[in-house]
Length: 234
Image 1 (tube, rainbow, N blue to C red):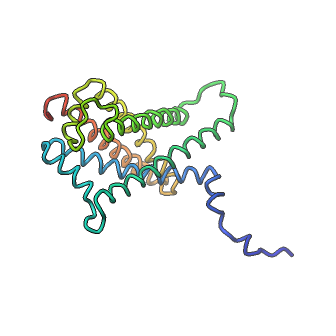
Image 2 (image 1 turned 180 degrees about the vertical axis):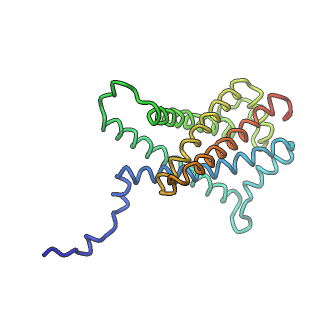
Image 3 (image 1 turned 135 degrees about the horizontal axis):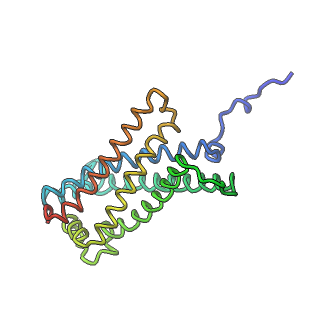
């Protein structure tokens, strides 16, 4: 008779969970939701640009003083940045590894391309690449000012207006935001399925929620460059 030992009953290790496709999908889902929450807050904060430089620059200063006096100046902001870096890296790495695993599982392309899921997968992959490249450009443009010729340290309102007065800044930003909307629209539903929240009865509700979040993010972010282009923000 074979009896189960304590080691037989141990849950799988974190390494084993990470090595599995289910584990990588779970990491993608959780990290994606963390980023969506951040983006919703970020989009809401960006709308303060419509209330003038005093409000917007004051908001930017508040981001650096959050948590005072318990937290030192910019500490809370750096905690948020670290969490976001971890989320982005985890999301990108798990997505890349899942993509490579999918390619290895079927090295020969199908004779007839499938619609539906394969189209959504390609959209997510290319959308993710666009967003990653945009994230790098966005940091270099409005955070470090490396690629921003008119960058003024400590004047975020002026930097935003300066960026979106250039047509290429508008094009880059709007294309990235549209990619973000599509990415969130599909990813929200996919994350719900991965985390076991989805079901036949809740499918329509989850898809509707994903659509609403995607639209809110798209409109919220696009409103800023449009505001500058139309002269509402100047």
